[in-house]
Length: 424
Image (cartoon, rainbow, N blue to C red; front, side, top):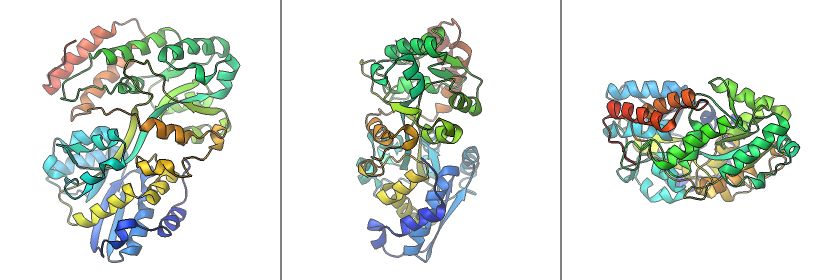
């Protein structure tokens, strides 16, 4: 999704109606909201339009770096709210790490009316922002995973995307593509993103619904072992860790089929502009044993802080921004993938994308996001992510026994978190 100018966004929003917001009465006072990079332009545009309707209110959007948000939020919570905004952007997998540890520091927006709006979003997304059956956040964007593939490499190898229905098909045809083109099917480094996608297709993650360590779940083990199998087959490119090597794989065509969230579209266009017309998307392969053709990779939403002095204003603005079609279409055009269900039936979502040879990739993403299964991240997500990162980078490209390495990871997590581990 291409970024558009803030002035254009603002003009678009001001020209639209605000639904219930316009009739909510005049708000006064101010609210400060933290967000990072790509989220800032549509937020500022929405704030400008909101303030036009409520001239005595002031919505301030403060841009703060992604990692800085979490550092400042942590410091402010420890300091009992000092220096914190009225609301902040937060990622799905970080929600538990803050709200479940400091529940009294965040606003239960469900009791303010947002509990009645959960059906506006995919089930997995609403679930990610719940605490004790109530909504404690406003869902924003999502990352429905798909396969981004290079048309030219598939054509040269005589492989059609429709032939890849299962992960075993992915392996089979990946070998053919490697033999005929020299290209790798996809890449791996010290990031366990591919593992989380494949386990997530079953609704599995580091922890189960009760918060028990669940790394030894047969479905999760199967995912990790299969990635190792692809590495041994020579279709998984071992690249250096970090974002730049990942983008380099894309721009050079070293890797030709990449499982990733819908957000990758914008990165492909910006990092490999000369490859226009050579890209397509297809659903994730399924094994047919309880998995679905997508998983969540990325996504965020907003949480309100108890220290906010103007909760009504903050709530009304964020409710508008996340539940009104016009506002979410602006966010979509600015580079976000909305999780508001109503957006998926708009003409913007049914448009063909020239960079992808006219394919209606957003309709494919909309289909994918509707089947995603919820995953319980827990407040100890960070520790498990570290363990799997070490395991992934140190073992995937070797003959290491994955089950034994998972045993070590489970033992470490039990000691660090005090959680029980499921036995299989």
